[in-house]
Image (cartoon, rainbow, N blue to C red; front, side, top):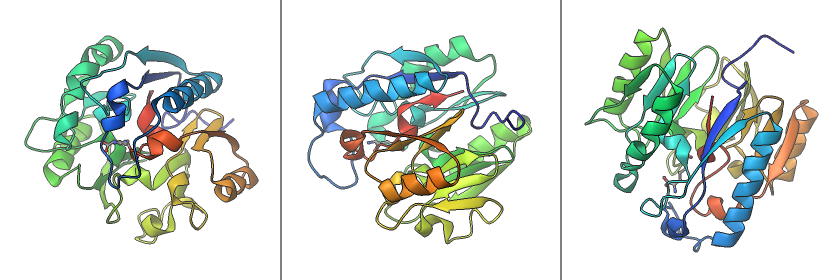
Length: 262
Ligand code: CIR
């Protein structure tokens, strides 16, 4: 195995079970309410897949007051150097941060937070071994990015600000880290040249929703239903696990949103 890379080699993960209120979760386009029972089943399978990939899981209780609370990724950025609490740009999600804070306080010695007026959601952050890429989006603004840049520079990390294609919720809606030098990306995102220093594997045409995957140790977890992209990844040598995600997808949620990995 190659040298240890903390951007995809992990030991732990935090997840939060969906609450019945998830049916009122935010969405860019309304394609109907998610089926709660099917979502619970998919969520349990997701947690089990992380466990099989080597994660010790902290499963948090549902938060009925926060329909999008299961998308824990957006509340914090977990790095080897410490954790940064985010400040979500969606007003209904701001309070999720206080809910996860005590859990992270127990796990990380080094603690920082994004204070207002900026907003930033970690779905817009892709950490690689050499830099932290942050997309400006409808949820993440330049004040939020500047606040993160200042924290990260104290930790010796390089932040690079990038653009998110129009109509795309988060930067990582359209890309994922596959290994230290390889990114899975949609063509619409990669064509900006943002990944010119990386190897890029493209999602297949019509399978853009496959771009939000996660590399967790020896596995790539991806949403089921994107056979061509899954095939590309397997041909490139990755061990792929396809997981049902139809219900979270109705709320623009993919593989990365459902966990914090560290
Ligand atoms: C939202 O709109 O905030 C949620 N329905 C989906 C969040 C997805 N999170 C992520 O991509 N990191």
